[in-house]
Image 1 (cartoon, rainbow over the protein chains, first blue to last red):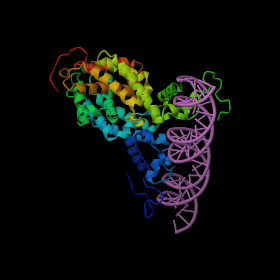
Image 2 (tube, rainbow over the protein chains, first blue to last red):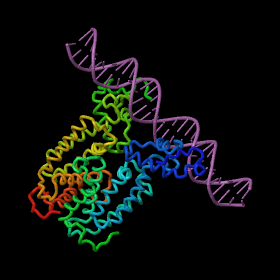
Image 3 (cartoon, helix red, strand yellow):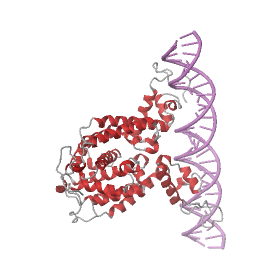
Length: 209
Length: 209
DNA sequence: CATTCGAACTTGACACTGACTAGATTGCCT
DNA sequence: AGGCAATCTAGTCAGTGTCAAGTTCGAATG
């Protein structure tokens, strides 16, 4: 939201913006959160930052590059959030919280058609996040669940991802109402995973990471 | 571009295309399934159908109208598929199958930023689908599940939607591998919902949360 | 301190897109 | 047949992403 159009009398950023990359990213996140990735325009972002229309292209090669940078940053943030999860259920709650706190990142992260799939920062960020997710699942023992632990991870991920996605697309406004979504999800996950032996209480032997 | 005789070579569609609306829809579904909704261009669709660049605008007012029509059609198809579900788990399997068989519809249906929210066909289609989903959940009894039946619906929908979404975005290529996704989901749903009393058969009641 | 050098940014241009308008063509209906 | 409404064409306008070439500035180098 930087309101400074750099209108002269700005000795520290007369020509160079100073932190244009961050300014563009921030504006892009605002637009995406409000109107979706489709409504994003590089020229509009440049206008908001008070720079010329082609300035963004110097920091992000093109539109896809900007989206890819956002997705990579999102995976990094998600990995950091998941890394501190106590157990699988907590990881799910953190997943939902991440989607609510960073809706723009979340949307872009799972829109592969908008990203440069072979980007280095993106792939490493994604690897970090999947590692964090995998370690959260590591506390699950196959005999407790009845199926492959990998499948338990798929189940947990699907539940959290579906809940987060439906939440962001306003498809749960009715059922969830004004209740705290994270609390609703916690109830859901507890009920579904409890009797399946995934409550995480007795699986403390396998620490995180 | 094209000179005088233009398309010709098509005796059965000299001036009027015959079924341009369906042709545009079909081409749009192909493009979306292959490259996502962002890569969709009305002019490109017109080119594929061999008509002028403004012809699609008569059938769908604008780009948003086209996407909205696709979403409405998708909700209708989904409602039809869910209506024949035997129980909640079967409904989930059908949900996943729908996403795999109609990936373009599925993507657009849950991208509210691309749609005209107050469109009549869209809202009625969505109502049909949610009714079908609700009736699939109606077999669930609260005392069997430990929580509100409405929340059971949210859980089931989240699981199926998350699985389908991750599948379409190629995030489950590793875990699922070459196995049949619907079979994997059936296993997942069975394991998660069995002990929670949602298998479709009556299950033993148990203590609350 | 002066020079150079490269990164950050600007300017200008091109092809493309969605949206709008007016007009041409066609099939259908009475 | 005549007319009418749906269908499609053709032209235009503003907006967009991207490329190429210039311009400005900070900082390292001599």
